[in-house]
Image (cartoon, rainbow, N blue to C red; front, top):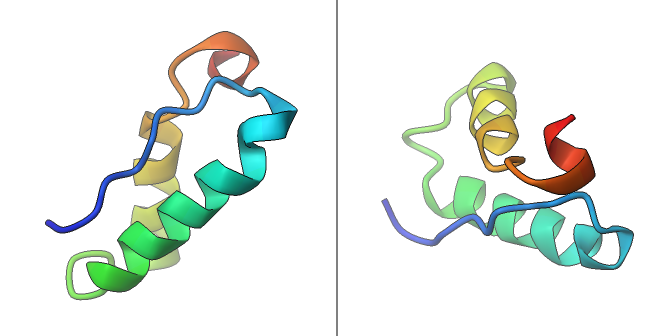
Amino acid sequence: MIGKIDDFDGTPDKAQRWISSTDLHFDINDTIYTSDKKKVYVALSYMKDGTAAS
């Protein structure tokens, strides 16, 4: 896989950057993430800390 999704802690000021990193990751790896369901599960796995984890 190419690209990396940053962990997200729910900080509003970091949201747009995190969304951009997920979009880039999914675009570059489009042969792996062939459905929105897969993308959602992967994105949720990076919401580990802070308010994003609750």
